[in-house]
Image (cartoon, rainbow, N blue to C red):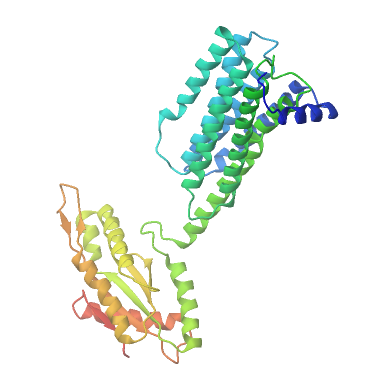
Length: 411
């Protein structure tokens, strides 16, 4: 053993002597059973996940099963040829960790890369060398610790870097589990470098480190699987909430959201005695777009107009899709003139930005225009619908006046 201060070794030795440890192989078996149960549970729940989450869940499940398989081979290393079970078992464990990394990358729709699995090849070659050519338990432990530690740190970083606007708490919990496991593996590798160069086997009982190894390793496939499932659940809930409030084609607030927001703003304006206006926006001659070019181009036209309106609906103003080719903008305007300016900005932007069509069978540009009707809050109004009805009447005036214009209802 190397000379120098050995503060950690005496502590572990004293603790090991005072505690009645289970046989290390028994700990491995208990952890393997827990891994298999968690992998099976994830398999049962797999079909209940959305198609966007299933590839990530599949990787996590396979990684957990590889963990269990690799742990079985490590646990029987003294009952089978070491040159066979140790390289195979450790490679399976490395692949399990790498699949966890790919699972979190797939969860966030990161680009695929086969280079991610390169450490598994390094592990396989190194384990064969340090088992059959130059046998060394410490070298095998150090190699596995480096591969695990680096992979888990990268996986935790992927979770943090790709954090979503959904504020998933479980994302940070899972990242913490990955970092905790990485820290233990790195510490284990350092300990082997300093104090355990002559160790005979990691199955040796009476060693705190050997007992802790399968327990900490099981944190990933057991507790980590739970955190991953909660992460999937949070994402599903966020997607359902988004689907209930966002129009799937245009990504604008849908009719339900516009209505609830309009009611809230109408009530606030009534209490404060301030001006509130709603604008109904309709794409001119939209039926002819569908008739001439088909519904696919019609969908592109809707998306294009929605994007232009959203980009030009500034400040606290809000625009959403009412249905069909009709949109509604909620305008926080101090005066009727300000509401007209805001609506005119949207109208002129749509006129100035034609839809670019890449299909060679279609014209290169599709010029679109919108008609806009504005309704303002009035003292006798009882609901947001009263404002919206006036905006509809103003829209009819705009269409009757030749389209591609803005009108405000003054009746």
